[in-house]
Image 1 (tube, rainbow, N blue to C red):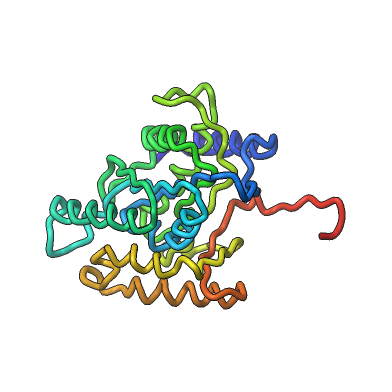
Image 2: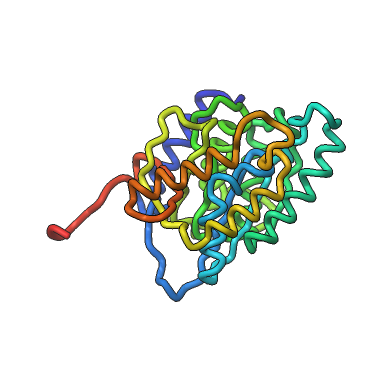
Length: 264
């Protein structure tokens, strides 16, 4: 774990960038401008389940979609060795990405051992500089899974590092991230507040095709009913949003501000 002092310093620098307008937590992009979405998950399958319908919808609208799996999640099958299941998860992730219309990047880390350190932040920062995302999607900061919580902290800090000229990686600094969205995940529920809901009704069939590429979603690995849960969640979020189906996201509290000249 990184020292608390460094953590506070990073957060202060982040808040200064937000206040200065260098990083905008929530923003809009012209409808005819192509956006790039970078979804960062701790394990292969995480972002597809939680935000895959949004990714599919935005791909159909002409946006570029990139998924970064920091680990394969290769330790979750009691019948296969991590190397065997890792090979399976890699194939499944590639098939799921193809169904969503996404590019896929595989990180160098091992399931259950995702480091919460400066090296991981620099790795993700360099991916951000290479991909040049308009929006970044990742895990909510609180989770019962250590890899999820680490992925959230690493990714959030990496957006800042990617923007700083003084941080040297293989690619030049990039300051074009307009927002970080935290996806709704059953393991990341503590403190999550659905601030943004997106109508994904039109992309839901694609989402189902994509996530069922994974054996663990179909029910062959875990006794948790992933498909039932996320299908039901999309109906519930859709009902609250007065839509057919929806996916929900939270953002940092610093972005939950509106400045108006008059009543909207």
